[in-house]
Length: 349
Image: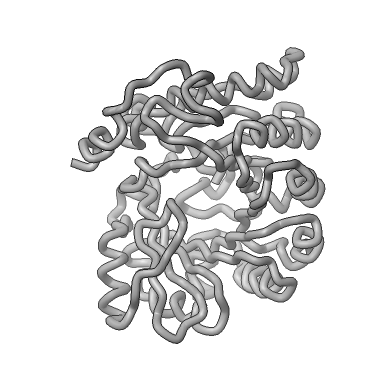
C-alpha cells in the first residue's frame, strides 16, 4: 500500500531527459533535490551495536577519500544546480582535522545557506565555537540513552559525559539549530521517551526518535528491538496527552510540541520509509560515491571523475544522471540492492 501511494503521486507525469526537463537536480518521479549529505570520513570513536562490530571494520586508505579541495569543488558544482543545504556526516566527522575548513568552504559558496553537522558529540566541546564562527548553522548530536551504563552498553565506550558536554557546548555558542538524534529501541531505551522529551522543555532544540535501520552485518534490527514510528508516536501521545503537532522538516513523520515547552519532538520513519515521496536528499560517501538512495547500491564515482581530469560539467552531469535514476522509494531500492547490510559508517550517516 505504501508503494502504491508513492507511485500514484509521482508516475503520472511525462518525463524526458533530466538536463532539459527542469532546472536543477530532478528524478523521473517528479522530485527535486536541494540537500547534499557528505560523509567526510569512515572512522568513528564509538562502536555502536547497530552500526559496527566491536573490533571495527576495514576502512578505506586515506588516499581513497575525497580531499578538502575535492569536497569543496563538489559543493560549488551542486550549488549551481540548486543545492542549498549541506550536511557533513561520517563516520564521526569531528575526527577529520580539516572539518572547520570544510564548513567555511561551504559557507563561502554562493547559494549555500544551510550547513549542518551530524556527530556523536564527543569532540564537539573543543570545536563548537570554531564551527559556529566558520558558518555552521545546525548540529545533530546522536545520543541514544541518557543512562551512563546503557550508553556504554550500546556504544561500547564510556563517553556519555563527553557527549553531553558537547551538546551543552553547541547550546552555549549559539548554533542556531540543535537536534538530538535518538535511535529508538524496544527493551533498551523505550522507557526513556519522557526523559528525552524533557530536554525540549527549557531550550528550543528538537529531539528526534529514529527507527532502527538494517545497516549492520550483525542485523541487530531483527532481534525484536525494532520500534516502529507509528508506535513511537502512539507512546508519546500516551505519555503527553496534551502534545500538539507542529511544523517540522520533510524527513519527519510527525513533529510535536508539548505546550509550554520551548523545543520540539519528531519521529523519523527511517525503516518504514513513509516519506520517500518527499525525499530531497543526495548522499556522497567518503570515497566520493553518489548514492541516490540510502537503500540503494548504484554508486557513481565523483572521485574517479575528478581524478581522471573531469570538468565541472562532467561532475554536474554525474549528479544529474545518478539522481535521475533514483528508485521510486526505499523498498524498490532495497529489493534491487538485495537487502543491504553494509555498515552505516561506510554509507555516511
